[in-house]
Length: 305
Ligand SMILES: NC(=O)c1ccc[n+]([C@@H]2O[C@H](COP(=O)([O-])OP(=O)(O)OC[C@H]3O[C@@H](n4cnc5c(N)ncnc54)[C@H](O)[C@@H]3O)[C@@H](O)[C@H]2O)c1
View 1 (cartoon, rainbow, N blue to C red):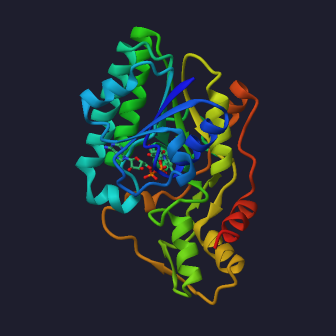
View 2: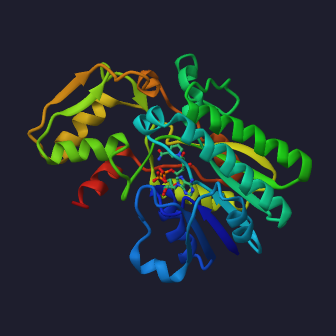
């Protein structure tokens, strides 16, 4: 197939591009290189790479021609980045997704797989064990609100035109090439440099960490699924941030200590006390669900440096 990956130079996108090329697909990437280019250099000549913005309607329309499937992953993210640039965050989500879907409908693209987020559950996990897709969502940041808007926007396009759309609610993805906007690379960096690992809050808040290889396996499995779906991609285990910090100090043999700080203002995500997802729906549709243990994933990361 010919597959367009928006945000393909990013962390998740670059792993997806790698896998799609391995599987023999023709890959087109559009990315504005906000975070540099994470696509392995040896792959660059095997794909079409376009340095551009998903908000550029004409460019998007041009790229979508003859494409079979779109993975729409371009986004502005990171708790601090989103807090500092809420309008830019929403613009990229809303305008970018509108351009992608309109071009996809015009050029009869079969399917769009869109990167949503577990962040839209917000505080819902306090009353529910593992979050299923049926739980009421509670988006509070510009980022989460725009992701939720896009889920409903895609559902509406599916209803009107029958274009297959899958919204992927990723739960704290981690792995090789992720940068230190996210907690795991930040802790590794602090531990390796012998600096304090900085935990915001009391460290008892939990997250469900999903390894990149599982995330890509899920994306590939979902290529076979038709219709409109919202699907969690979660590891179904929760770890406190304090435990995570301790694990990384141990794995890296670091002399670092762990400090617990008040979260900076407007960093709402740090206040979410609990997050654990259920991947039962994913399993029901594809026979696959994430399985990599956090300890294994962290050990893999430790071998990289
Ligand atoms: N990493 C996670 O844990 C996680 C969790 C939930 C959801 N997601 C979603 O998954 C997707 C991929 O996330 P990631 O972790 O790879 O992030 P990332 O920041 O590494 O990748 C995003 C990519 O989008 C590109 N981009 C940003 N604005 C753009 C624009 N206007 N036009 C074109 N390209 C643009 C960036 O340059 C970057 O390469 C995002 O949509 C994100 O919201 C990620």
